[in-house]
Image 1 (cartoon, rainbow, N blue to C red):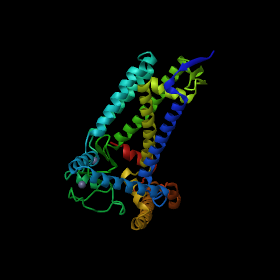
Image 2 (image 1 turned 90 degrees about the vertical axis):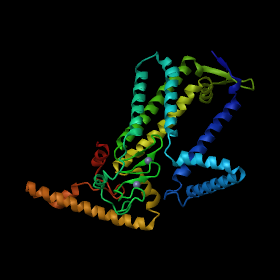
Image 3 (image 1 turned 180 degrees about the horizontal axis):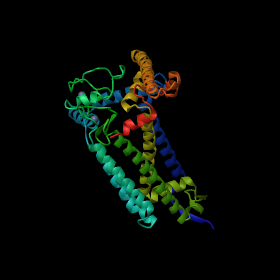
Image 4 (image 1 turned 135 degrees about the vertical axis):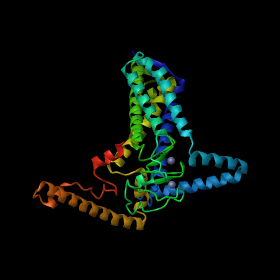
Length: 393
Ligand SMILES: [Zn+2]
Ligand SMILES: [Zn+2]
């Protein structure tokens, strides 16, 4: 039996427009993001993506200067102050956005999703546990000391790492007035030097460094799990709505008066119109689920190779294009490897003395895994020790 869905608002032509425009906007957003974030890498700098990035920035500068000439100076000053505050000062705006997204998402979940699962069942309990863990980790990241270097603990941090001679040399911080410990960086937003500086995270309004990186890692992983789980649960609800109403077997009447079978495009728009809050929740958790999964994988890679985001950025954005840095990097890299081999041989000799073993030194050296040139970073000490270095308290 054929069932018709009357829906003038969801006519064929309009739904085509809507889905096509949604696709175009998504494509433009993804392309622009890629060009802005990856256009300055060594891989893209001299290619089309690098060219597009340069053009994009020149257009943006031109627009900015034209805008400044057209509007009153007082308004330009207010906009500039607001931009400086939002982008270059430590502020709680993104923290508030997190609070808004989390409380809004929880409210929509509680009032729009849970009723489909017969009140409190395993699905809803797991979600609330994931939300609680995520909020707790967020608060820890916001408040935990990232490893701020002060005069009182400077010596302790100086002993953590040796300068590699390329990215870290014996250099004084012009603000803090002490020698910067290797792998540390002065955060211009927090105005402090931070040990094993990773990056300044606007979401938690705090630096991510030696002492809170493990919490940050747990936070982004828990966000990825929460969003992926939320996406699946919302998709199940959508599936329930479609199946319980028998929408798949229906037809709808278009503007031309003809009847068409309901397809995935019609269902998508039907759910967007009839369940807007659920649709918003689904799109938000889907977006953050994909983004945070990718971000977590990137940080897994950083942990396994014993790099910080700051060091990764330096290696990939400045490393190869800076001839001096590149040459030094090779020298230091080979020096680091030589030092590691010498250290390994020394350890082996000591071990041989202790055990009176006749094992060849070279054989033992061969069994000690040295990093391959592709994965080696100045502070690489083996995968397992890289992980324990990050996770230790
Ligand atoms: Zn400093
Ligand atoms: Zn900071």
